[in-house]
Image (cartoon, rainbow, N blue to C red):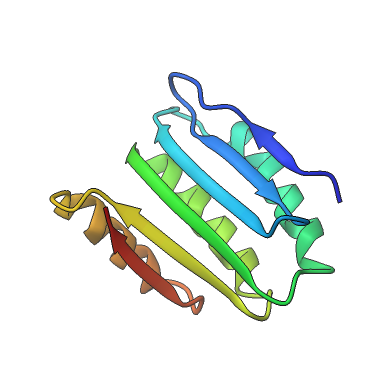
Length: 120
């Protein structure tokens, strides 16, 4: 399976999904008014991955900021991970960014995928 690598831009996060290396990372900012077109390819890649996943799948989320529209897209990604045995989400946030920590906790309550919260 080919890696999915999208560099960060002014309004979109970096995406680095690599099945062979076991690396699944979304980081940066997501400020698009309509992030659906951006995340469509990410959803498709993750859906294809879910058909033959690694034994363990750890998706690391490291946002500086994201908007409400992006939270819906994240929820869609997390719903795909619910179908992947051995998956987990690592939610990283600046140590003093309570809003980002709470955002992760709110999303964690909506899915059955285990979350790990890591301040940095």
